[in-house]
Length: 128
Image (tube, rainbow, N blue to C red; front, side, top):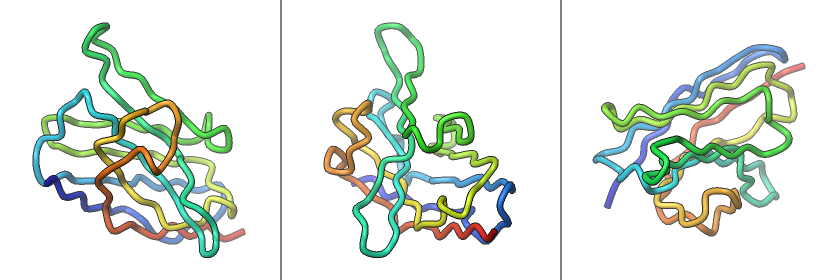
């Protein structure tokens, strides 16, 4: 089973930027949805962004939570088996543990229950 390892988290002031990376241990078929989720203590895991290759159109489809649209960008480098999340204009409410996920069934739903493989997470802390 593919293993995922996140990196790039840290502490930043509001308005700053971070780029998260998720390295997969093996090639994850590009038709499978991958994504980023986040979680704070006592709350459910929240979908942040997902990405999937549409083999019929040859294009990439991305989906974002309303709270991050225009600020976060998800991308992937299939040659490196790596998923990224570029986070700009960070806000204190973005503070959370961020998780990479793979083998998602329904990309557009941003639902953690649709994903079968998870990384260990990387902490992002945004101070005001």
